[in-house]
Length: 126
Image (cartoon, rainbow, N blue to C red; front, side, top):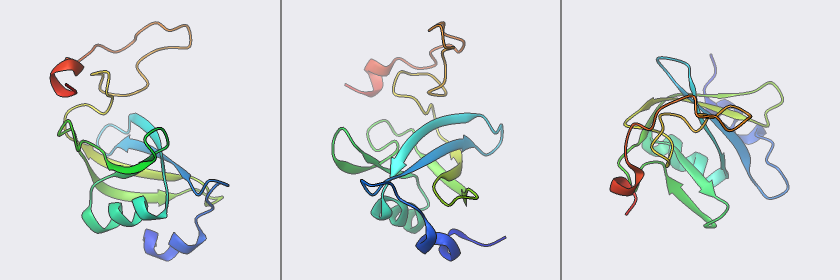
């Protein structure tokens, strides 16, 4: 298997310079979240071994878990066939969602919660 280094130059960023990143638990293969990264965030991810993204609302790069301690250690990084989406396979510490759920995909399309809150977000994000 080729590493991301082999494909880094072929990543197709959108007009704003971002690429979507799907984050998946390496053990359960559960989808934890979707975020966006720019080239600098991807480089930080590769350099540190921990997931970094670009916050479009805060207009800055952030390390997942920098406030909560709920970091994502990178196990593998994959690129899709069109080179316009990345997949981070991670070892998740704590929960991935700022709402206190294990995954950001805790509701069905009707808004019914299918997963329990595992931590009180107010104790993590004061």
